[in-house]
Amino acid sequence: MQQQNIPIGTLVDMYKRGELRLPEIQRHYVWRGTRVRDLLDSLYRGYPSGSILMWETDEPVPTRDFAIAQETNAFAGRKLLLDGQQRLTSLTAVLNGVPVSVKGRKRPIDILFNLEHPEGPPVDVVEVDSDEESMVTPDDEVTDELEEVEDGDQGLQEKLSRRTFVVSARNLLSQPQWVSVSDVFGNANDAEILEKAGIESFRDPRFQKYSDRLKKLRAIKDYQYVVHVLERTMNYEEVTEIFVRVNSLGAKLRSSDLALAQITSRWPNLLKQLEEFQEECEKSWFTVELGQLVRAIVVFATHQCLFRTVAGTSVEKLKAGWEDAKEGLRFAINFLRTNAGIEDETLLSSPMFIHVLAVVSRVKDNKLTAEERNALLHWLLVANARGRYSRGSTESLLNEDLAIVFRTGNLSALMEPVKRQFGRLHVEANDLAGRGVNSPLFSLAYLALKASGAKDWYSGLGLSLTHQGKLHFIQWHHVIPKSLVKERGFETGEVNEIANMAFITGQTNRRISNKEATGYLADVVAKQGKEALESQCVPTDPELWATERYRDFLTMRREALAERMNAFIKEKAGQ
Image (cartoon, rainbow, N blue to C red; front, side, top):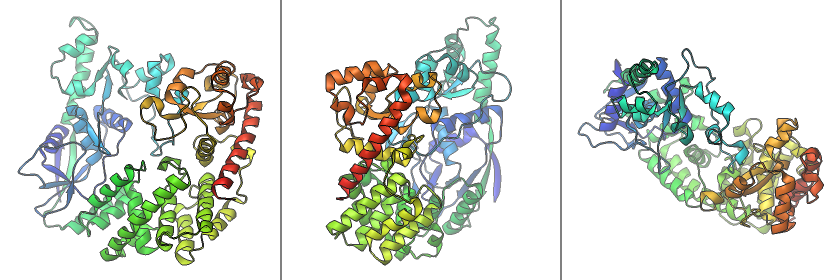
């Protein structure tokens, strides 16, 4: 294996010219802006940031497109990138000011550089982003930090001023000390940048400091990565094994990514089929991650969900499993949307539910009696609300449920493991105490309120996660404003309880902002009637809207929500 030291600038040029290609075993570009920010910060400081792994080959290997369009090149396909895709794609996007394509949509990666950053080591702890997304947009009082900057939060502005790089925000970009990293790399002349920063003469004491920092920023292009190049004599299966081992040892990829790599090394062009099916699901507003499609193949090929069986499963079995998986998943998505009212995957406490529903479809050949349909729906709503696959070993729990369906086909029996796991099935008011938006009960609250006819408090729009237009996206909103409750000294768990959340559109949310509930709720009742509050289980007694009565408000609403949730499940399940 050869080893070379190659500057980032050269690697980016190879990427742009199409000299580097992406083998089919690689996953999509998945980095968020904060990851790119932290990479730039490490490179700027000269910190280690890993190595690059390539394979130079003349073998016809299935490839996929990078997230950034490449030029056509006679040498295309000679060098395949096995490790380093996320970094090189991010650097190509930032250094050249070009957008990346994520899920069919192009978006820029715009990082800002602070010309006035403090000297010395970084002052902030690196943030770890969750890969989980909320079912609805958070309310305006819990916006991300950069949106808060635009509202003039001085404390947050001070915090960001201590950073060297941040993800771009309109308000920051208008300030003289912040400059777009892409603009710096796109312009070798510092004059415009320094002029924007308020430097009118080289006698300005900031002139040399800013010039030196811009030079140091551009020197990122000279940062040399250690590049390991695998020999041409290796075949695709051996290279796939190396890819799996490298990523297993570094824990960089999920087990589903590694399983996909093992499958595609024996089943060329599978990835294209998976992506086409993903697009089909997106048309029904359902996003199914590649990892779940791989798991679905394993489930139908082996009647269990563990990925470790992939290497020993024949391609013929895997292909047959994929055909069953597609039909089963179509049923699962339709059942979720039309029977359960679950409009998209974010309302599920775990994506594992789709596999049980898919298996039911194939085992029953899409022939369910009314009793079986209701039993399946009852299990789905209760298990989802309780977080069936969110506690303990997810795969063990899923295998327990899959075994029931595959071996017996008795859908009523699915509820037995749930009873053993949680004891009781109905929701009690105390279950909601201290539970927030990350609780599985939050989704049930949304579903129950939507089914009861809850509407936006200003526009009158019914609740739906499929509304068109940003103004009409459904958000969760603190009924008694968060800032006012925090001022009263309530604990965070109480402040962000489900019992303090209502569902309204983004435009209404911004209009309400942090107004006193005694004022804006009275206005809602005057214009929309008490039903507007009752449909969202909000107490209609004006005395309970006062911030000082917050705990009484929570007590009343917990009771109302629990009653509504239980009634919703019973009605849906035909009980």
